[in-house]
Length: 148
Image 1 (cartoon, one colour):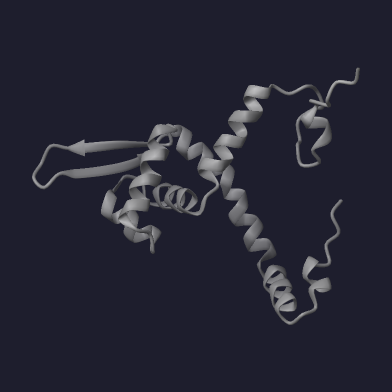
Image 2 (cartoon, rainbow, N blue to C red):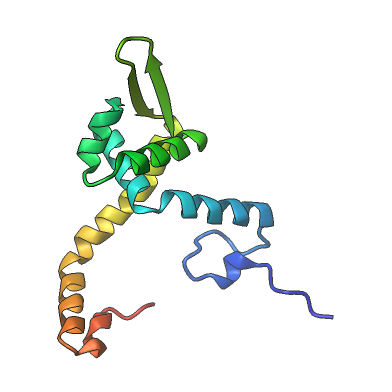
């Protein structure tokens, strides 16, 4: 009887940890976190809060841009549930609500900073590949950088 290969670290080329069996619960958590935080609105809210600190709900929405109040509410609630932001409600009329990144949220922001750096480094090549693809020469769309 052959058991399935559960050594994800050994099989996955992007994984930088030493080879060895992985924890299925950790794998599930990582997939869940990626699904929650790698969406457009969470990433933008994370960036806005990292850059500006504690902000009122309305200001977060203004700085994120083009987000509905419903989607902003959903995004910030999920971030709060995951311990990425702290929500402070002030007992004033009208009510005032502010959001601020937790230490965990700040560390996630630092981890995803690499995405912005990567995009900056590869911006021109991506734009050229997209143009080539639109022009019909999709063979050139892969770029000139071979995967190693």
